[in-house]
Image (tube, rainbow, N blue to C red):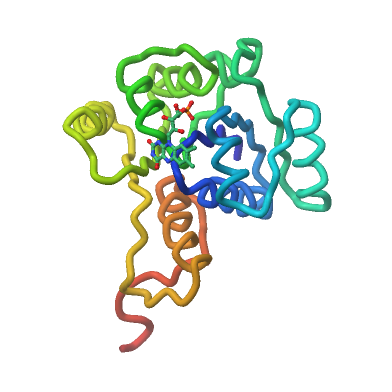
Length: 202
Ligand SMILES: Cc1cc2nc3c(=O)[nH]c(=O)nc-3n(C[C@H](O)[C@H](O)[C@H](O)COP(=O)(O)O)c2cc1C
C-alpha cells in the first residue's frame, strides 16, 4: 500500500515514528513529510537526533530501515513537485501523526501553505482516507470546531489518547495502543493490541 505520513510538531513524536516503523515492517511505500516543529519535538522527546538537511534525513531513514520490506522517501516543506502535492499521484491514504493544532487549523481551513497542508488538502479533494491524530490538552473551542469540520468531511479524528483497559505496563504499550487504532483506521492488519471481547468458545 502507498501511504502519506506527516509528522507535525505536537507532543508525541513517538507515535509517528512507531507508525513509520510498523509500516516499513509491513512492506508499505511511505511518502514522508516532517515539519520543522516536529524536528524540534523529536529531538526533545526521543533519543533520536533528527538530521538538519533533507539529504541527511533520507540517509537516516535508509539506515534505520535497511533490510525492511517497505520503502520511505522524505519530502521538504515546499516540495510542490512531490507526489503528495497532486491528486494525480498522491496516495489515497494519509495520516498526520501527531497533528498539531496549527496543522489541524490549516487543514480545516484549506490553507495549503506547506507540503503537509497541501497533501492533506489533496486527499480531501480526492475523497481519500485522511486520519489526523491531534494532541493538545485542554482544547479550546477553535480546536474542537476544526475537528468537527474535518469529521464532517469524512476525516478520522483519532486523538492521541491511549486507553488503560488493556493494562499497559510501559510507555511503549501506550504508544502501541494509539498506533494500533491508527492502523485499524487505515484498514491494515495490526497485532500490537489484542482485540477486545470474548475469544473462541468463551
Ligand atoms: C516540545 C514541544 C511540544 C509541543 N506540543 C504541542 C502539542 O502537544 N500540541 C500542539 O498542538 N502543539 C504543540 N507544540 C507547538 C507546535 O509545535 C507549534 O504550534 C508549531 O507551530 C506547529 O507547527 P507544525 O504544525 O508545522 O508542526 C509543541 C512544541 C514543542 C517544541
